[in-house]
Length: 135
Image (tube, rainbow, N blue to C red; front, side, top):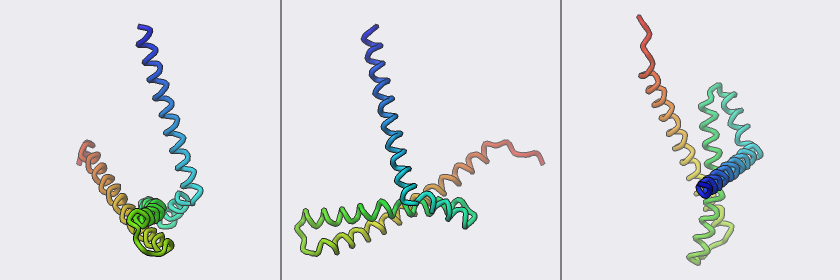
């Protein structure tokens, strides 16, 4: 009985540690987004247009571009190095960054489409479950 309690205690401690680590990573990501102005810019767009959906779309687009540009530049440089292709490193970085930015915009628009359709689906399901009002 004591060995089982010891094993369960260790599992619980590991899970608590993983939860704390994931929380710290989430806080670091949130701090990075706040520091780069992504969240505040998205809020301003939502308030200025009077529609929170516009702010969410802008958030997805900014996150896509911020993730896509460096990823595309690194992928372009890795491709250049691995295949020993001829060309200027700066031009390869610019081309990769541009391709990554376009891919990030497409990913942001895809996420916006998914979130809008999910919202519409959830509203339809909730409306179907609610009792109809008497006429």
